[in-house]
Image (cartoon, rainbow, N blue to C red):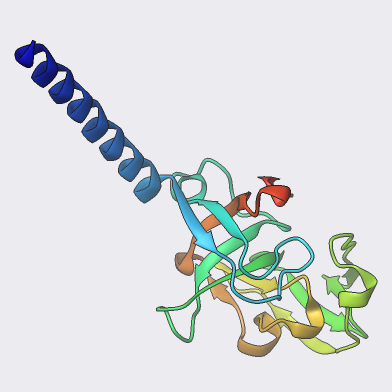
Length: 176
């Protein structure tokens, strides 16, 4: 009886250890949990929400970084900080802002994800997005610290795409 109990316990511990290793590999290389800090991405992401970031998608080239993606990156001025913003300008494009309207190569960008109350009326002179860099903005424009203030995000600083809210439970689901 005691040998059977020890065998069951050892089997259970083995299965637990394998599960922990698989979860650690998954979190380290594929999905990383991240806590949103701040209101710059409202209403899509709120302060203190918990999300998963797919670190695999860009690293292996499974998908290119596209306009509209919510990317997580090391802040260019302080690589110890991570930010989350929406990609607006792609390499080679010219981005400008006139009375709060974003223009890409002189044409207005349709931004249904930015509610009227979160817009601002700021202007920004034209900026050409360098090769291997991106222009990013927060969705809550009047409270966002973004490319308008500190410039472009180098591709090497982007380490993931925000894909899923897991907390709070009432917001559970994929990000668009």
